[in-house]
Length: 203
Length: 203
DNA sequence: TCAGTTTCATGACACTGTTATATAACGCTG
DNA sequence: CAGCGTTATATAACAGTGTCATGAAACTGA
Image 1: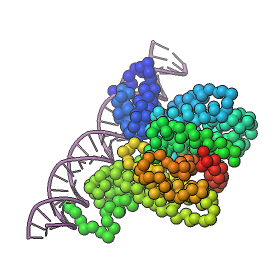
Image 2 (image 1 turned 90 degrees about the vertical axis):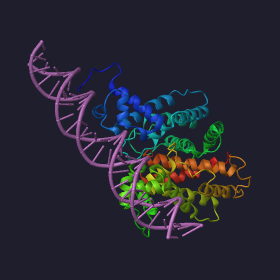
Image 3 (image 1 turned 30 degrees about the horizontal axis):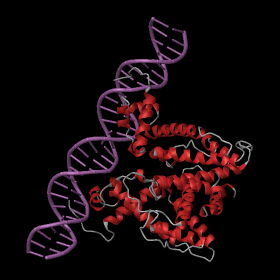
Image 4 (image 1 turned 90 degrees about the horizontal axis):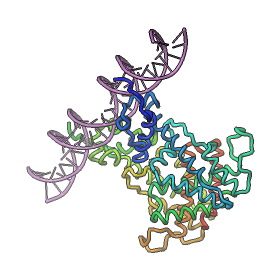
């Protein structure tokens, strides 16, 4: 027919929520525009006018995911022990990933689908980690160099990237089922590995 | 019609090769049974009788990939410097992943699609890494404990898993476009990070 | 030779993303 | 308030998809 009244919850929001749910449940692979449109009480045309297509809808979900992710990491409180704070950050990171594995995968492991990744080392989410590392290293918390002067990273940024890679790698292997042990053991090993990673922030 | 003569290259092999090509080019997402069947001069029914379906075909490609991967890693020569050997292994690992990013992704990042992962910490490919770590640590090269006695890892296995996670994490982030710098810089940083990871094999 | 099994071509089914068309609702301008 | 352009959305069609049932040809082993 034609354009019906917009409800309290706007169509765009409903589509985003339903799509997020499907992606969290079964990954981006299992996302069907038709079924998402149906459970949002609209049609696929809405997806095209509001987002641009299937890929763009997924991209919107990913961006929403990064907002949530940033909030989770930023909520980790600062104590007077920067090393402990860093570990807490790593545990929060892991918890987020394991809570919604499919979601985490879509956020971090897409590649080449034309998605523009909102999470670059310059992004706010990364800066939370970088600042925590800088505290632990006794360095200034904000990158003091000229903004945009160079794509390279300062020492704290480099260390943060290494820690990030380690955490992400462990979690990624764990999600793929390649890490042995039960859930508790894996959690302990993850924490122990992060603690053993002090050397990564030095070199 | 009916079953035509089997050619020199059997249908199964052709399907596997075409599927590998498509996956290397555009990932598992872009694999269409119909187009793979067409370029293999057969029909989709062959995929079902020879493999079992789309998912099973992908799984077969993954297994073939792990065979190639194992061969690449096993081909890294041993010198009298176990530390350098370990680094060389890491570089070979990275080279394999960057040569066919889609392929690497399909191998390591699937999760929950019902694929049974042939690459577990007990698998031969992992054992290549574990043995190299054991040499570098001055430990016996083969896991001397009762086989299957425990799902846990021995010290060399634990260290190997950590190094694996670090390498995989760095590569995964790099494939997603989250590591700054040009290709040379990224390669150097990767090597530097592996060298700095000595602490991971201690704790 | 002859049953039994495997391979695979054909065709149908339900489903997919995308797009063209048409129309209803909104936002603006006068 | 009237009119107009823009946007949102329903409908319907198109080409493509994975899967499966049917049946026939080719292998296999006794």
